[in-house]
Amino acid sequence: MLFTEYACFVRDIDQSVGKSADKRRDIAIYGLAAEIGSLLSAIKKAILASQADEAPVTARKRQEVTEEIGDVLWYTVLLGQLNNNNADFNVFTNDICNLHHEISAGNQRAATIRMTLTAETTKLFLHEADGFRMKRDFVLDEYQKLAFMTARTEGDQLERVCLAVLTQLGAEVLRTTLPKIEIDLNKNLVDRDLNTVLGEIVWHLSALATLSDLKLTEIADANRAKVTRRYGPRQHTPLHDDSSHSGEQFPRKFDVSFVSVEKGRSRMYYKGRPLGNELTDNSAEDDGYRFHDVMHFALLAKLGWSPVIRKLMGRKRKSDPAVDEIQDGARANIVEELIVKIIHSEGTGLAEGLDGRDDRSMFTNPGLISFGFLKQLPRLASGLEAEGNKLWEWEDAIVAGSKLFEKLRCVGQGTVTIDLEARTIDFHEDVYVDLPGTIVGIGSASFLAADLPEHLKGSLALAGLLGADVALKSAILESLCRDGSSSELQGELDTSFRKYGGVVVR
Image (cartoon, rainbow, N blue to C red; front, side, top):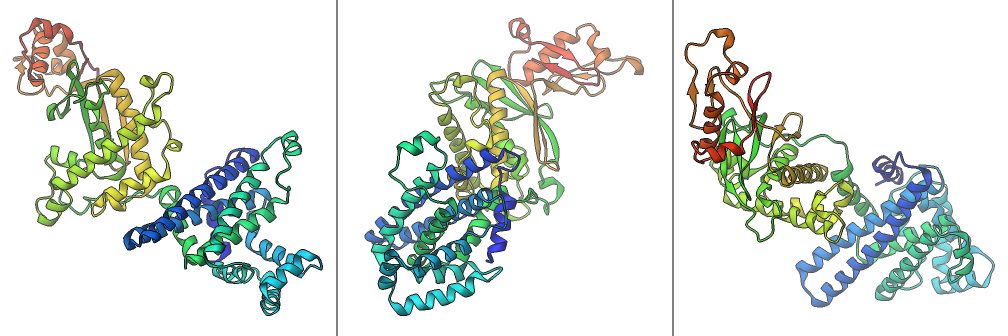
C-alpha cells in the first residue's frame, strides 16, 4: 500500500471530524497510548504461545499482533495529521530525515551509532535515505526495509527494546496533554517535538513487524479492511433471502406487538395471532429478559438475519434443503440465541455499579461497544449468513435493540415496526389490532354486528355498539389464552378505538 493511500484512508475514516481541534487531538493521543498497551499485551500472548509451541495458538496471536500494530499505526498517522494541521504530513519520511540527521551528525552519539551499525551499513543507509527523502510517495514496505537497516540490536533483544521504548514513547505522547506546571515539575522525560516522537513510534512498529515476519503493507491493508467494516461507507449488505421466493422471504414491512399477559409473563402477536410462546425471565431477578425477542427483531432489521424469527414466522427456506438445514436450522437458532444472550450480558455488565442502572438501557450509544466485543459476534456466526454483515450493521442492531429492550422492560408492552427495505425498527407503546369490517376481536374470539348500514361499519361505529366493549375485551382475553368472561380480567384491560381503524389495547 502507498503511503498516500493509507493517509487518505485515515483521514476519511476519522470519526472525530466535527469536534474541536483540541478534542480531536486528545482522542488521537489517548487512542494511540491505549493501542500501544494493547500491542504489548498481544506480543506477550504471542511470546507465551511460542514457548508453548502450539501452532494454532501461535497463529492466532500472530493475527492479534498484526491487528494491534495496525491500530497503533492508524492513530500515529492520524495524530501526525492533526498535530501538523495537514492531512498530507508524512510521518515516515519525517522519521527517515531524523535518522539521517542523527547518524550523520558530528557528535559522540552519532559516532557510537555508526560504530554499532558498521561503516558499510551506515554508508548504505545514508545513501538510500537521501533518495527516499526525495520521493513524493512510496510503498510502506520501502520504509520498513530502510528503517530496519538502523536497528542496533536483533532478535529477542530488539523485541525487548521495542516494547520498552514504545511504552516510553506512549508516555511521552501523553505528556503533551499535561498542564505546564506538571510538565515543569516532572522532568523524568525530556520534552521533544511530537513529530519526532511519532517517527520513533513508526520505527519501532516497523521493527516489530520485521521481527514477526510481517510487512507494513499487509498490516496496513488488514487495518483498512478491519476499520472499514465498522466505519466504512454505510451501504447495507443485501437481504439474505432476496433470491428466495416470496413465501420464504421475511415480510418487507410488518408490525409485532409485545403484550404482558400477566405479571412477569409476555407474549408476541403478529397480525393478531400469537407469535411464539409465552415467556418469563427464567430468572430469580426481574430483569425483563422475557422481552429479549426484540433483540432478534433488531438483528433482523439491521442485518436482514434472524433464524429464530424466520422459524417463528414460518418462513424457513425449505425449497433449498441445504439452506434450510444450515442457515435456518437448529444450530443457527442456537447461535443466534447465544449472540443475543452475550449482548444482554455485556450490556447489563456495563451498567453495574452506576446510579439508576434500572433506568439505563444496555448500550446507550455505539461508543460503549468495544471493537473486541463487536468482532466476537460475526465470529460466533461463522458459516452463517450474518458472518458477512458489516460490523457497523451489528453495531446498529445492538444499539437499536438495546433501546427497545429498555422501553419494553419499563412499559411492559408495545409494538415494533420492522422495515427491511429501509433497515429500520421503530417502537410505540400502544398495542392495537385492526378490526376488519364489522368483525371485532383478535385471535379466535369475535362477534358480528349484523344489519349495520354501510356508513356505520368500522371501528368507530362499533365503539358505540351495544355490547362491543365487553365483546372486544372478551375477544382480546381469549386470544391471550385467558378467560374472556372474567370480569376481573376485563377490568384490567383498557381499550380505545383509533380514528383510522384498529383498537388500542393497554
